[in-house]
Length: 171
Image (tube, rainbow, N blue to C red; front, side):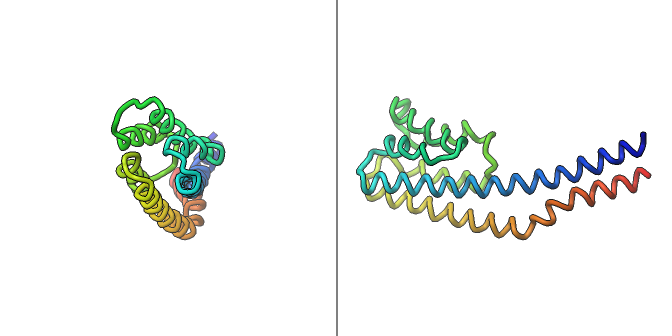
């Protein structure tokens, strides 16, 4: 019985290390998807002269589920004109999906920059704002990849080592 308990502890700790590693990988994928979607929105505003709400709607076809949900909520709020403050609408859209994303607080701060200067500016200023957000997110992607490369092996095996230490202690 004691042996079965030790095996479960070892397995549970090992799996937690792999889960931590998977969360970091998902964070990178989400950040890359945000960069891609903002580039599509920028392109729609620049070349197709689409308003912000239509550019957000057009980008939904290219977004992953959780990221797309943010832009879908934002586009609906813009269309319904739920309030006059675009920053508030973008903040609501971000916070509505905060539990389903794997982003860190600094990632959310970079994403919130989009809402602070969009919607009420002219086309050129919106493009510059989106470009600024894209560059900030690209920096986040680079930092996240660098961090992931440094910690992937540690994340995967630290759980095993912690489980082994607990198992040895229990023996």
